[in-house]
Length: 441
Image 1: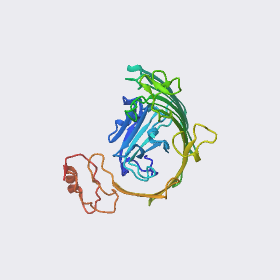
Image 2: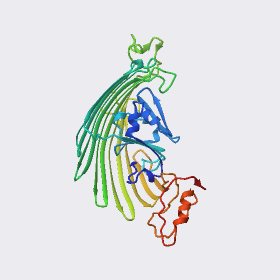
Image 3: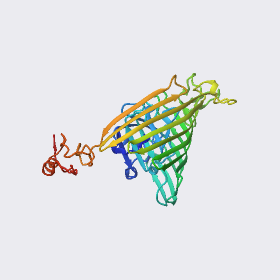
Image 4: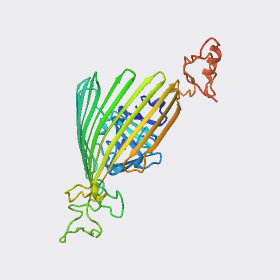
C-alpha cells in the first residue's frame, strides 16, 4: 500500500507506480539502494561515491528536495539537507518491497512533491542466519550477517554489515558500517512494528560539490528509530507511530590527514600544492534531529472509505556555519548556531470505488512554524483501472450493475464483440470474461 492513508491497492492509484518485489531486489547486481532505484524507470539517482555514499533522487524533473521518503509507515526527513535523505541503516538485502511513485499530491507529504519512494524493511518470515562476504577491485570488500528468529506473532531481525574500498582514483575511498534491529508483535490489541538502526560512513568526496577544490571529504553518522501500531476494530482501522532521527555531518572542503592537508608551523592547513585560502575557516559541522508522531483513522462503509490523519514533526539543526545564535547550543564553543521548526500536516478525505472506477478527494493543510501562513493542498482524482489482459475498457461497470445488456465499449476485442452479439439478450446481464485478441478501434 502506498502511504496515502487510503487502503486501496496499486491498481486504483491515480499515480504512476513501480513496485520492486523482494525477488527483484535480491536479483539486483547493485549492493546499494541507489543502484536498485536507478533500475526503476523514470527515476534519476545522482550517485556520488560508491555503495550509496551519497545519492540525490529526482522524479519527473523535480529536485532532490521534492522526493518524499517513507520507511515502514513513517515519512522521514533530513532538515539539514536532502543530500542526506538516503543515509539509511538499511542494507538492500533487508528490503521486502520498494515502491517508486511518480506524481505528487498531499498524500505523499507537505505539497510540492514530484514523487516518493516507499520502503518496506520489516523482519523476515522464516528463521535463519545468512552470512556473506565480497571482494573485488580497488580494495572492495564487504562482510554482512543477518539473523531472523521468532514465531508467527513475534518476529525479530538483526543485521549488520561493513563495506570499504580504496577507490578507483585518489580520494574516492569509502568505509561504511550499518547495524539494524527490526521487530514485529501481533496480538489482539493490534500489530506493533519497531526498528532501531545506526549508520556510520566516511568517504573521499572527490569533486562532490565543486571541481575548484576537488579534495573534499565527508563523514556522517546516524541513529534512527521508530515504532508504529495498527489495529482494526469493526469498520475502523487505526494507525499511529512515533519516530526519532539524529544525524551528524562533518564536511571538509580541503581533506585533512596524511597525504592531504595538515597543519603547518603557523597552524594553517597546507598540502604539497600550498596552503588553503585565507577565507577557509575549517570543516563544516552539523547536527540535525527530527522527532515526530503521526496518526490516522479510516472507516470503511457501503458509501466508501473516509480518512482523517495528522502528522507532526519537530526538526532542528545545530551548526558552526548555519542558523542563528538564538538556537545555538549554550556553553558550546563549536555549535554556536542553529535553527528549529515545527511542521504539522492535517488531512481528511473520502474514497469511493464502483467497478473499475475509483474517485477520491483529499483536503490537506500544512502548518509550518517557519512559513508565513498555513497552506491548503487539495487533491482530487478519478481513475479507471485497466484490465490486466489488455482489454482496456471492458466491462466499465460492475457485473451486477442494474442494467440489461451493457453497450459494447469503443475499444475492446473482436472476440469479445462476437461473444457479446451471440449471448446478449434483454433478460440476461452481460457476463463477458476478459479474453485476448486484436484490439478493434
